[in-house]
Length: 206
Image 1 (cartoon, rainbow, N blue to C red):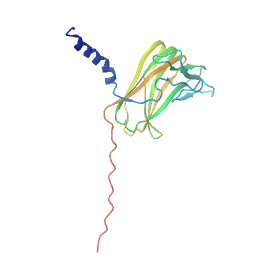
Image 2: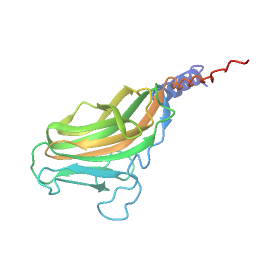
Image 3: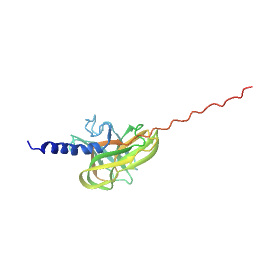
Image 4: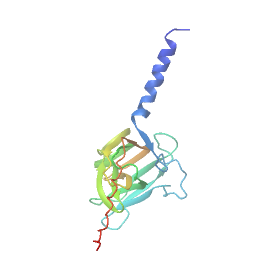
């Protein structure tokens, strides 16, 4: 047996382990790979669909696609079907973030595009305290026609955040796909300081 065989094998295993290690602690996303079979042609299990349209007519079609995917058997597909200014199509879900405030999170996905305009397709994070928006973050837009690319956002979760809205958003013309979403967290959470107890005033005794 080659004396170097075991050390080399250990080195290879260590290198393969590094990406998952550097990603931090995994945070669960419902149906992150869009693998759940939809109950209807336009349903996306675990995700809400939102679109902004100036005329009131549907501008985007968003659905699960079992013909094009980066991994597994399905992805989510976006297509703009009506040309209107300043519109977008978004799939989003909300997760509990009470244990994430003060930590650095990374939201990443695989994205593919076909003739997507300059505003592109982006990942988005909206930080909330209750229903109040504290901050937002977006990835660099992916535009044009490209094969599967890795896209990510790395951001510090603001203190006081209780919920996070994760999203994938097509903001221009064209067709785009997203797949293999992941959310991870690193660093220590910020624990809210305890409120000082207010002592009652003492009454003078006679």
